[in-house]
Amino acid sequence: MIRIFRVSGCSMEPTLSDGDYVVTTSWFLRVREERLVVARHHQIGVIVKRLSKKVEQGFWLKSDNPQGSDTNTLGLFTPKQLLGVVFFTIRKRQKYLAGKKGLKKQDK
Image 1 (cartoon, rainbow, N blue to C red):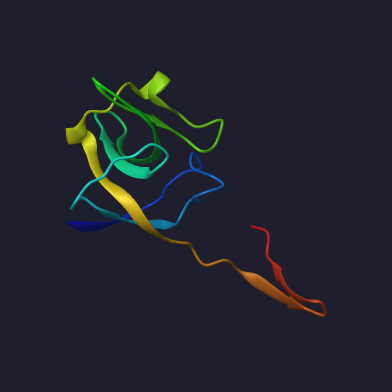
Image 2: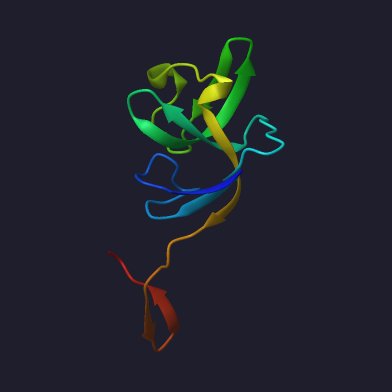
C-alpha cells in the first residue's frame, strides 16, 4: 500500500521540515538501517523517524534533529508499529522575494 503523510514538527530537521509530505510503501517492506520510516506510537500517534538499528525485540528509531525524541524516550517499535518506508518526499513550498540579485528565501 502507498500512503502519504504530512510532517508536523521539527524532529526530523534538516532532512524534513514541518509541512513537508512523505510518501511511503508497505509493499516489499525492507527496513534497513538509516531508512526513513513512518511508525505508530501508542501515545503520540503517527511519527516519522529514521531507523537506527534492528534488534531481536524490535526497532530503534531516532530523530535527525538532536533535540528530537528517539527510542530512549519512545521505547522500541515492533514490526506491527511500522506503517511504511519513505521512498519519496515532497517539500513544502518556500516563499521567495525577487530582488536585484535574484531570488532570496523569505524568512518567516
